[in-house]
Image 1: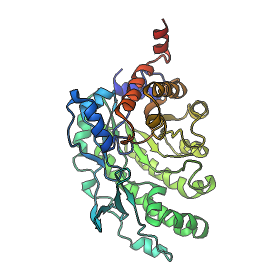
Image 2 (image 1 turned 90 degrees about the horizontal axis):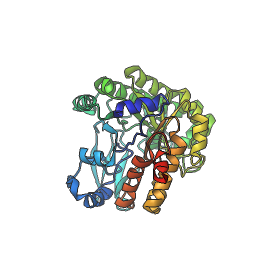
Image 3 (image 1 turned 135 degrees about the vertical axis):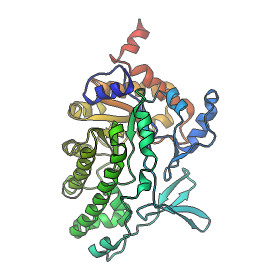
Image 4 (image 1 turned 180 degrees about the vertical axis):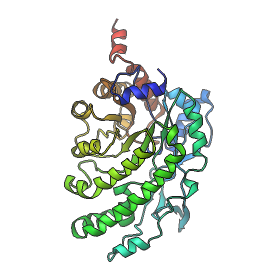
Length: 391
């Protein structure tokens, strides 16, 4: 099968020739430190010394075509351009403000940027302040400059699946970064009209951004990503009732906008323990759930997730980066990859990927063990590789 045919089978819950493999988008690529060590381990590929940074905050990199082919990656990702980024310096610490006005600074631990302030965090914030805030221009042509040509070229290449990576926005995530998580959660209980107004403004701008984006690339892509972290390691960010009251209607509106502009499947990235709201996500049009963070409560039982939701939802991810890829040996990683493929890949409906970025604490040997195991154990009918070895 060609990669696009393989994806179509997955989305239709049919078994393809093998489990598709994904990596290389803004939540799911190599941190620059991991790339350096991987490049040294694969000298025969002659990878670029200085790859382009894919995501400013995470400091991960764009993948070279030859690396994608070595790792067996089926997907190539069109990534929206960042707009409105303003460089900052706090003392001697570099930073920036993103298009929403949220400030970030560089931290040496992990070599990435972290948010350090909330521009709508005033105690006496009101709806007028939200209205007068200097919001990003959703029609800025810089967001999509050059993307249509790249998407078209990949679309004309049947050897790859073309994805539209997410714009740096999320209903809950962006609102919380603007307001501050603590204040936003208090607003949900004490000032619901204020919280609702903030969610609706973020959603309106996000809809307009995605509409412009997809009018450029929508006819060329197979998957569109929406990012919005809704969970922690142990629970949802907010109660299921508050999710359904405040966030779900806005997320549904954003997904409806996307589906009005393209026939591509919608992939939602949400870290954390989100099992209680998976039925809600299916209801509002999520086709693929990423990352299936197996270290989060309720998400490790991948066989159970498949049994409960696998007829209505495809799964993407499932390979843990917090413990499995970091702490296990290559042989142990192979066992884990085979397990997740068996749990999530039966009858199709599964795209294998790491749960998040691969950072410098994960060795090339561990990285390659995952990708090689995907190739070895992802062949349908599942289990055929083991049977061949036994015979």
